[in-house]
Length: 346
Image 1 (cartoon, one colour):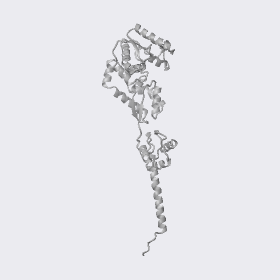
Image 2 (cartoon, one colour):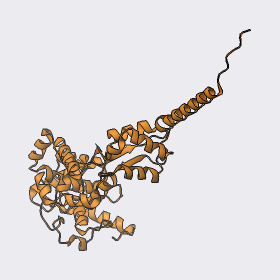
Image 3 (tube, one colour):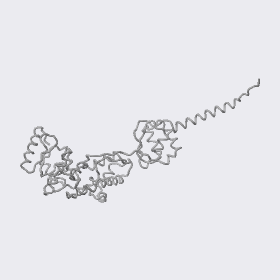
Image 4 (cartoon, one colour):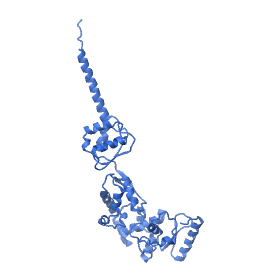
């Protein structure tokens, strides 16, 4: 029989080394690019404008965004992410591998913020709401909201500038510059004020800004949307007759005491341009951001002869309307009696 050739030991060793080295590099490549790495500790990674790669890496470590920061770092360098950092709000999917995660970061594929706001009363409140949802701080936003020149550039005054922000849901990027955010809101304002809405505003002799100021009062008075057109009609009747609006929500705004439940004579004497018991016509600006429903209630107001109203004594949130003082006083006494019975003094 012919003797089989034996494989030299040194060749076996080399083959084993090649197998081990290949396995090591294969495993390294797998853990670096393909293995699950993103944790469920955070929903988003926020990368600020101007952040360097090292700052991003530190955030990832501090927030325990990945299981293995070393493999992330290795993949980031291989994928040239270290020189391609883009700010933004990035959604984190648990189990995502480094290759996909870094691809999103490198490409700037951030997740938009669904920004919704309503029932905002003061600029300070809105600035805070903006800061909660976007990169810039509340001080920056408040400064812009009080910028007379910026307001003027969009066709507003500092007092009525808040009317430009139509309460709705918007999709915006977290790191959008404040000035660009405001420009976007102005675009939405212009889209909102269609030819039909502008024609209706003109028909009641009000500018869009004035419609917003009246709609804010209507919003402040109405607990029920179905009553808004009737309330709007009442205040339009007063405006057309040259009467003081005498709207309690404006008095509360003038005092800046939003805990008031019962407007008293001492409140009515507050000397402030927003107090429509003292100053005739609409206030300088909206006392809150009016809702779209309130704006449309003014534009589609209910035609009637009422010039007085008072909350109903059943505390249903609806109002008793009147065409004359005598009838109104009867309604007012009923409501005041109900307040006294519930010991509501202020």
